[in-house]
Image (cartoon, rainbow, N blue to C red; front, side):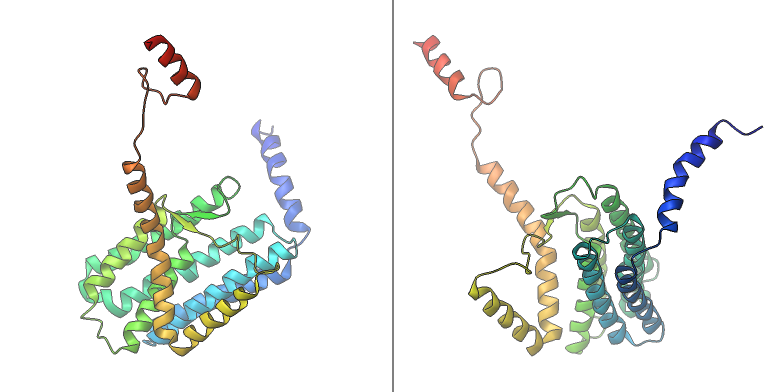
Amino acid sequence: MKPRFAKRYQGEEQPRMNTIKKGIYVLPSFLTSLSLLAGFYSIIATLNGDFIKAAWAILVSGIFDGVDGRVARITHSTTRFGVEYDSLSDLVAFGVAPGVLVYWWALKPLGRWGWLAAFLYVACGAIRLARFNVQINTVESKYFQGLPIPAAAGLVATVIIFLLHVGMEPQVVQIPLLLIAYMLAFLMVSTVKFNSFKELQLARRKPFNAIIVLILLIVFILSEPQIMLFSLCFAYVLSGPTTFFVHLLKRSKTPETKGADGLQPTIENKNAWQKIKH
């Protein structure tokens, strides 16, 4: 005799199986695989002591991660499988790889505090991805709720590239990097909003000055990539908390006039109150 829930269980699983049997879109999944490959190579390079290659591999993974989503939207090939595969790839490339990199390069001598900071970064990155998947159809597309994990990984990678470029020894920056790991972990699981730049829509017509600004930005990045990439990532990470505190400051300075019942008075209520008063 079959259990009562067997029929219901089969009915829930059948659509999933049929969806997978129909096949997957190759191009977006291939780009996601390249992102995963770059993240995995970063871990291997870190374990081999080639930290500069490990950091650049994380940035390369970020490029493929940004492209696969746009290709899926342009070709109308977005699927639930693609979303889940992309999240698993992001966890490896932007969670595990940066955590291992920052621990192996600078935090290892700190012992327990070092690997706990690296683990907290990875754990908060996983929570950030899970929350994004759950809220993907409810949050506004203009902003991210919490720091995106690719941006957090970008800061970890670019700060190490910058420090290696200026010849900084890891022993000197252990405490700052420890604080950065904790800060990134907190921002990823916070409700602070970060601009998603999805409203830019570069494929559409733009003013002529936009191409000039884009060219100048490319020139500045190529002139000193180790410095400019770090500056851009650091500015983006700071943009969320800065906007949040500015908004709180404006709200605290805005006087709120309330009526006798404690509610915000409307124009009609004000007029009625004046008549009663007189």
